[in-house]
Length: 462
Image (cartoon, rainbow, N blue to C red; front, top):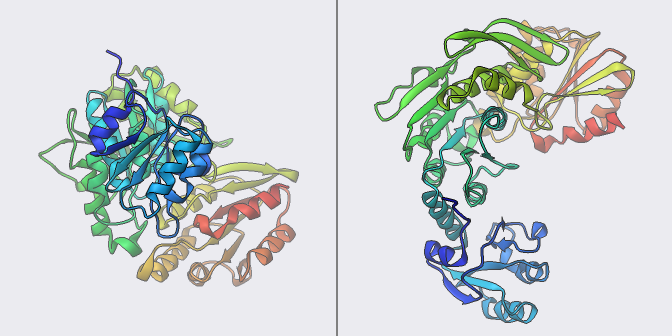
């Protein structure tokens, strides 16, 4: 039986909305929360944020050819907007709801329950969610039609957009990301997962969440609404997850202890590990130990869904990294830039530094910036990153940011002070990199995305 996307009648039922105008047989294919992205046939959800009210852009999306939209019953200019919408498109579908954001979640839950027989793999963790989901999806796509999270649609707003795309896929691989306590149970209720994957418990958002214990408890809530297969795949090398026990679901652990003969060369990793009961050679066309962990979790998923070993190996080999995640870029005179600037946490920064340290180069240069959202823990965590230079061999450390100065403060215990430079501005940092770099160098960039190190990398490439 082919299950179709929700029609307006189902949306009305799920959201407890009132049809102001339009045809109940219409079936929206896409839901948009950004008016700038609306295209012909889309359904618009005008969310109310701290600074922007999406209702102000309803007329714009009607002009763009939107098929319909939600409108809050309390919106002050509701009647005027409805009247002007109907002038532009007399058949525009308008649904009045109590709370637009809740309505979005409600229709997502409705569609998940409508498609309850399609297995959902929910992926969470402090770091590595996106690369893990892509590795797993790459493996499963060798045999199945897979729906995988697009862009960064992993929040209590973004995830419902993905849930509304569930139609007739074989498996869904969806990411769950949180910023505050209380959000994960909401995501679990939307996902109703069959399998959960937890990558690690780190310090991301610790300034908001309060402690790693709180982060662990919150991440574990991804299992609150688990059903069906009831399997939880966890990183057995993580101090919190390695001791995880439960009578509510089966726990499957993966670990770097289960690999042999690791080699890193030409921007790729090879290693041996077991699939089912036999040993196979695995090749990942990326660098970084985290990608080995991603592959090990994907192997566990592949085994659960009975993929042949050669399919699992092929899927891992086809995995492609995302922009800003240990992305290798060669610029003139054989200078290599490692772009790891998508975001930063203590775990990902340490992992990246270790990965690059193991690469062969004329000289290795680390360019590090602030890690954000660490609150009262910020100074301690940045100081801790500096300690890693005790075991590393970098020729130069460039640092930008008030918090990142603490990295330099600790690193100078292990590096010649002349090999460490702290900068006040992005421009002065960029000028010094251009002056310092030579043929054969590797330059590693890592900081929170808000530090805008990507701008420096683009300038160097140009």
